[in-house]
Length: 327
Image (cartoon, rainbow, N blue to C red; front, side, top):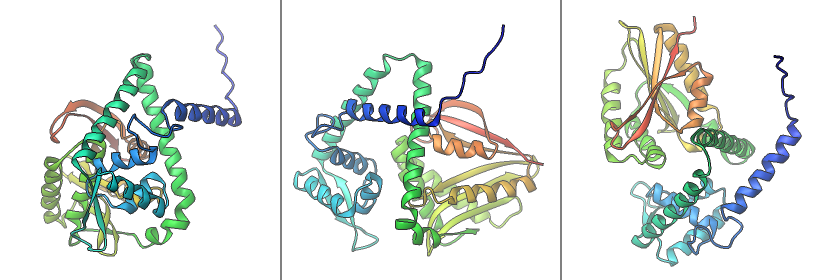
């Protein structure tokens, strides 16, 4: 039997099809309506409710950045939510000039209603697909969404983040305040993506503190992304020179540096270090973090184990990735 390669579809046709699918998604998910998720609120307000609920204490400027809104539009939207009794402001304990945003009891109630509406909507669609197609859909949409976000960050880089990124630098070793900053970065990110809480944040802080206290020591290293005195990213290698196996830990970069290449720079330094000291390196992550997985795989990591676990305070699918030294 002869096998004939299917011609690759032209890029122009792929673009047209993706545009059509995107328009259909916008229509079917309800973004063309005056209100979203049966909430009585505009789509941007619904997303603001979701983000504030996921990250209590978030600031208005962060809402604007996440939702791709200009500052004045974001301020008006938040003011409307305050007037409706859904959101409240508190003066930041770290900076009296800044305000932290929280959902009120009514805001929490509305968020639960929005979550149920969205869950039912997605669940109904998934029932019409076989499990294999569901997983393909999740991975494909994750890659597409990440690519769109990366493109957006690239376009606005010089306009809004150039000075911020240029002032960030990578340093090696412990710096005062880095443990709290790194624990905070992890806590906010994984509260949003995995529902983790105080148990997870405490483990990150206590284990990172013990690790930092052991430095400097041969076979271990800690890199930090610093902007002034603040830590905006980290990566550590915790290894055993006897077994020649290393553990990559606490890899995270602040959202403000997404698309800047800082994460890839951290990984490049770490891989150079482990190739000089170890035969094998592994890391643990969680299923569905596709952007991170793509980065790991680009440095030679492959999925070696996957299982449901509860060691972080809630049930998640844990994944172990392994990489052998490039010699």
